[in-house]
Image (cartoon, rainbow over all chains, first blue to last red):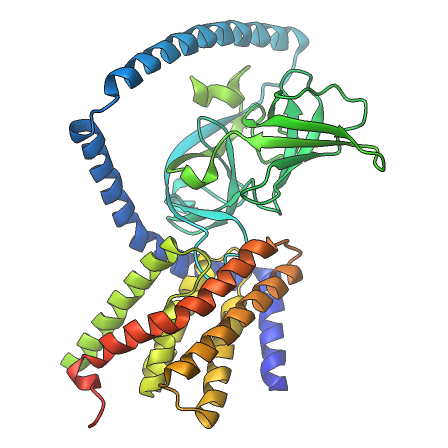
Length: 276
Length: 158
């Protein structure tokens, strides 16, 4: 028994140092899981689309009108944003700022959520892997906001660590007041917490939080959460700030993975090119 | 050869259905039920192959470093070995007891392995998953064992 325990501990620590067994399980087990679940997800999506398009036409007219109005609002917002982006580009050139690196978005489908008996972390399985240029820490988001980052990548499927997980932390900024902080997950049903916000920092309730890009993982400017609570702590130098994520992780079906382009360029707004 | 192919096909379908069921019930191991049935059939080569494949599947889907699966399935073998010495291993009460032990072990194992890697785990969610594992284990075993026994080659001797 002692020999068995010694062998196990040796194997475990060897794997922690080298990652070979993790890679083996990603290249075999994760792929088996992905290829098993993906056909069913695709079938479900096709049936759902057919049902919504041809059979369940209730409320379609109302939804259509609401979407038209939203589209008009978004178009005017986009026009203003383009003007501001052009101004930033000119100012960057005047000040000789190096333009931010470009990110390429890759669409991906969610295959599974929190799978298996050892799923200690809040994770998703998505159908893109190293073959698509995805790797460890690749950022994951939807059009509404950040989802998380790649924790483990196989050839064609990857595991995503959700931002609501207790072990997820990354840098954010208030969109209006530009106050920096570190946003931390507190569990899937709990609000996020923004750490290390000094007591006198300008931050408001309902202010949008975006990625700061300072952690070197997420592109700058991706929407993350909305501030819901600000309290002064009697025993700390920092404010207690809670935020609600912009996406409902339980209902995500498709995500975007952001592949980092080594070639620097693209000009102002390159970090947000995916929005155009 | 025909029996072997039929057996492989049976376990392949079981694996695929098990993965699907695991996607519907997060945090619970469905495949371990098949491992117990294989142990009860006393087909050790079959059991080893199933163990190898299923361990890779569970480790691949896991967010923890490789190693949890070895301890998880090792305790099944230990509990089964002790149970075989003391009880009737096809008795539903033994299966229920085994399910309870696995539920407790699930909580302890995930907590311990997460702590080794400096990960924090949501204790309340882990508790619910462990309870589900304990509760579903005897039910799933009964279904799988019954279906398995319907195969003519596996019918018990009268």
